[in-house]
Each structure stands twice: as structure tokens, then as C-alpha cells.
Amino acid sequence: MRKPLIAGNWKLHKTIREAVELAGELKRDLAGFTGADLLVCPPFIDLVPVAEELSGSSIALGAQDLFWEDSGAFTGAVSGPMLKEAGCSYVIVGHSERRAYFGDTDDVVNKKLNAAISSALTPILCVGESLEKREQKVTKEFLRKQLGADIRGIGAELISRIVVAYEPIWAIGTGRTASPQMAGETHHFIRELFAEHYDASIAANLRILYGGSVKPDNARVLIAEEDIDGFLIGGASLKADSFVKIARYSIM
Ligand code: PEP
Image (cartoon, rainbow, N blue to C red; front, side, top):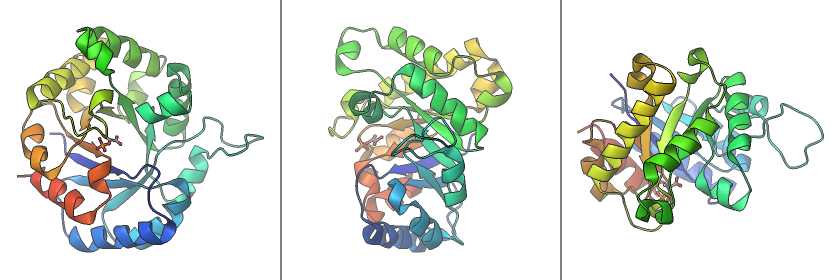
């Protein structure tokens, strides 16, 4: 049985004061909520104050990225051990915005995945096709290639520590959501890819989140799909009310 994971990606939003305020609201409104695992991923600078605010709650903390080296002359970078000490248990890797604006190739994503696992962080590996690929009807071929490159060389004993987020690029921040059926089918395909690369039990236990304009009014129909195990939420995670509603709808 896969427990849902409801994760908020705050992207480049929230100053320290705003982040602590939102974390406080979530802590209050989701006190005692046990039906799903909960996670927020604020900007780096907010991590420590948000960790302090969330202390005593069941809401986990994650970062939005990491560098693959632990330390060294890498100006501006933040490493896995640093995130761990800051209170993170998760880290997003390979988000399409990192791939598009910061040049994260599949090779880079692969190194970051390995670094996250070595630091005992749970990576949330984001994969997803562009509108062009979807329209060309080559989504499966694209995902097979992207995922294969991202997880290359990661053995079965380590791969069970990751979470995958399927995020069709055309659905991120656009208000366009994949239909439940389209998302469900693609999640099923991703699960099959893990069965091919590893085995049926790893595939069956893998949590696959959906991301792309998830809102309170589409959460219920999406989570009803058998292979959708939770959400990675951007815009709707920036307000306590919508994040809390999505969390609650995900267990009904
Ligand atoms: C995301 O940031 O991963 C995301 C899916 O954003 P949004 O929910 O705003 O589409």
C-alpha cells in the first residue's frame, strides 16, 4: 500500500517572514492529519526558519535542488549534507524549470540523484514531456529515454529510496491539467518502466506523484487514478487554504 505524498514546491516565492507565516498556518491547519505524508519545499534561504516553525508537526521539509558535490569551490551551490543538517528529508531533482533555465541535463540530474541518495535525502525525480512531444505522440519514447538516463547506474537497493513526479511541462503553471485518464496511463507506463529496469516489487512500491496545475477542484479525480500516489504542487501550495484542501481531498 503506497501512502500518498502531498508536496508543495514554493519555487522562487516567499521571503523568510512569508515562508514562516505559511508554514505556521499549515502546521495549525494540518495538525493531526495522518492520511498522507506532507512536504513543503521552500527556497534555500527559508529552510532553517521553516524547519524551526514546523518542528513538532508531521510536515516534512525539502529543498528544490542540490549540487552533486558535498563541498568545495562551487560558488553559489548547496550540497546534500548541508540540506540534511538544515532539516531537509527530501529534495526535488530535475524539475523542468531547472532543466530549462539552469541547464540541468540528464547527466546532471543523474549526479544530483546519486548525491541526494548518498546524503540520505529522498529525491523527488521530476520527469515529463513538452507539448511538442505530446502532440507528436512520442511521450512514451521520450519518458523512456529521459528516465533511463536519469536513473542510469542506480542499483535496485538504492532506487527504492526515490519518489518520481510526472510533470508534463505543458501543464506546469499553465492552468492546463492532464486529464485523469491521460495522467493515470502515463503513471502506469512509468511504473512499467521501473519494472523493466528493476523488478515488479520495486515498481509496485514506487510512489509516483502527479504535478501540473493541481488545484483543490481537480485533486480528487486525479488521486482516484490507481497509479497516482500524490501531488507535487506549485501555485496552489502557496496558500494554506488550497494546499490543505488538496491534502484533505487526497485521502477521501
Ligand atoms: C510544479 O512546480 O512542480 C508545478 C507542478 O507547478 P503548478 O502546480 O503551478 O503547475
